[in-house]
Image (cartoon, rainbow, N blue to C red):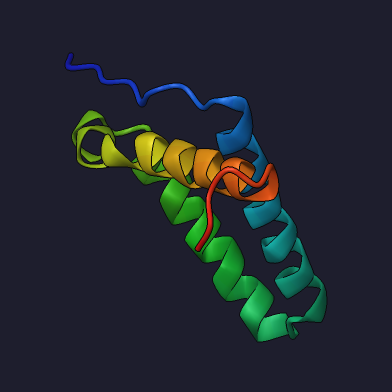
Length: 83
């Protein structure tokens, strides 16, 4: 059976994921019953797809992208980067 693994998150990447989760939580709180059902369906679909090796290989870019976004945000808040 084929296996695959996504890369690891750095600390700034973890902050980006936490902020994203917070935004989803806010959307959940403000959603109606029908939208909550759709969100649960999306969660279930993502969970199933996330364990399939082929999909994991297609999402190989995701941890690097999140880590880069977190590192850029960290550098911005530390005054090292200007947008």
